[in-house]
Image (spheres, helix red, strand yellow):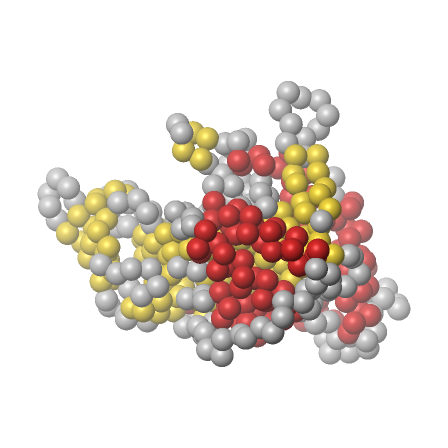
Length: 373
């Protein structure tokens, strides 16, 4: 195991941040990149990374890491220092209000121009992948950050941009385990979903906001659509945002289970020898992110849930009551779709407009920006 320290801060200043990555195996084979807690207050991901590091170190010592695996156990040292009135605040950069998992570069336009030159692409899909990855490494290297936050983004993306598998581990406020993936990745992501016992796999060709996983994956299907079948370009990066239940889902049992599932998936994908892996034959059916219903609060009040995360609900079914504590008026909050209730808010007094829950429906009806702030 090699340990690399990545300086994040400029040399002048009184506060300095540093990112740590752990490297297993050797470059040149199938590559996986795994990071935890880009939203720095999402602790379950860091515990899973802790379990993964132990397993990967043991596998490497046994000569069973056949590819390359990079693990970043705490992907946001900036966010880890942000605390307001004893409450961790790791989702947004306090210096500018920007979500740490938004605004990553989408290199499609630059790649489109570079690859249009004669001889760049051909009929060999594997050769095309190698060419595109070479250009991607060059483009990320040319990025000139102007802040600690963008320096962090560049450091993370440099490690991930040429990987075959990218897992960005997060968690919800309250939730069951679920994944976000690109639509063209549903098939290759299904073993991961089944191994992890995901209650939902939410797919889209573009969620909006330029999150980290799409910075690694979306360019592939955009390029394939642009250049067409004459120049075959596969979706060469299986990037997924893995939501590890809720903020307080922090236990050795859950983390060990999730780490074992990820190790098994890396075995399936050829990064390591995980022994004989039995992928469950059945799992949840992927649903379009455009079919996910947001249940929002129509007014302030006490929130009392009637259904639990992971429950299947029907259109018209009440999932929670919103109670005005002054008048006693009770407003039922109902699902408008059939689907699984995969995440909900942990606060029990809320104000108008707050998102109460999300339900994964099978029929698309939304467009535009599909992610939360």
